[in-house]
Amino acid sequence: MRLPSSIFVSVSLFTAETTAALYLSSTYRSAGDQIWQGLTLLFTLVPSVLVQLTLTFIHRDLSRDRPLVLLLHILQLGPIVRCLEAFCIYGSVGRVEEPYVSITRKKQMPRGGQSEEVERQVGQAEGKLFTHRAAFARTSVIQAFLGSAPQLTLQLYICVLQQGVSIGQGTLMVISLLSIVYGALRCNILAIKIKYDDYEVDVRPMAYLCIFLWRSFEIATRVVVLVLFSSVLQLWVLPVVLLNFLVFFLYPWILFWQSHSPFPENIEKTLTRVGTTIVLCLLTFLYAGINMFCWSAVQVKLNDPDLINKSQNWYRMAVYYMLRFVENASLLLLWYINKTDFYKFFCAPLLVLQLLVAYAFAIFFMLVFYQFCHPCRRLFSSSMTRGFWNCSSLLCLMCNSASPPNRPMGKSPRPAASTESANDGGHDTASDTTDDMPNETSYDMLNDTIYENAVETGNNISGGTNGDINHSTPCNAQSITTV
Image 1 (cartoon, one colour):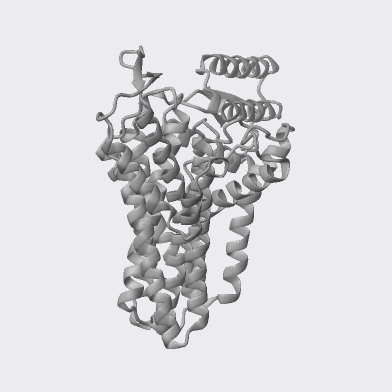
Image 2 (cartoon, rainbow, N blue to C red; image 1 turned 60 degrees about the vertical axis):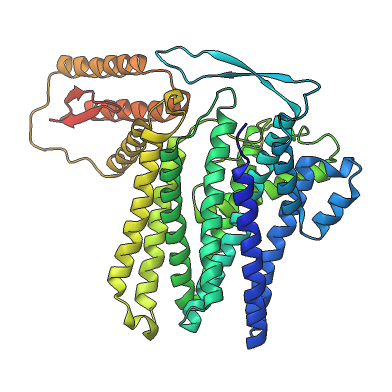
């Protein structure tokens, strides 16, 4: 049985950040900065309350007679008590014989095209530790993106306004950044274990390193860009943040409404419809908070029984990173145009270049992780490279279809038989290519769109007076040339 080290790390970050925030708020009070004191306490207490509620909900303490535990949760000491309880369970393993065990079946990663199913006995102690790990994995994500991320943005903004960094501010910002990166890492691991629940997942140290570097560059760049933009355009930062938040908050609900699925009733038997709605709103609220700062590895799907989208959608990820890169570049451009005299001590073009390169590094480590270090990459229905290639092919096709074709004038028309022959050949080639494509759920719609547009474009050209078509079929889309 593995040592519950992840629980210890989660509780350590939670305790350290809360302590540093309380100390910093006292310094703000001594300096007379009541606004900064109030916001610092707000971004500390609100996520702390949500963490207590999450632990209570997962462990079902409300339906059990544990008044002392509930009191400690009210006093915001729940994570510490749960951590001690987990280590007590770990220390008692092997000393007392288990009254009964359960049997779990997990598949191993396929080797040579075959996957073996392995049975394993799980005792009561290991089952309780599993519940503790799952609970703290979720609370780490809540603490990271509903507490640490706003806290880091706030403290960095205060440092820019005050043109200096105190020891308390620097300590809190470092702890907050580590908490956000750790929460994003736990979110990635949680997504892998949910999507591949039937398999025995073994995450290697190199995978942890790639995720850590990927998330560090992505989150740090995003926070700095938001702070720089808000330091010169205070009135415009609120619309930008609200627009981002509302888009990601409403997106799962729009997909749920379009699916015409019944309202999910299987979240918790004791919850009423109102309680279920509140839980779903909190889930989408957390989803929007994650996507505000980085890509959420856990994709919410309200019409799924598990509320999680278990398919790997490379197209959605590619669109997110392209739009986020454009948004960061636009915000940096607006900052550069409207920067104040305070930034004259910095080389502004170099700073902009460094931030864009840092975000590019984040994308690079993400690609390395999914291509080489993902523990379940053998189970991908399609490679990541092919997914991004399909996305870029679709974008290129849309750009080409939007621009008017350059057709040469003055040539004599081709014979009708030749045109008809070429037209038939276009249909044959398209149908053959479509039939030869592998059946991949994630890309059927994307590939069909590419081929249908390509064939339709070919037919439109062949119908003209000067139309003649040469067909060649590269990887994903047909290349149509006008002669």
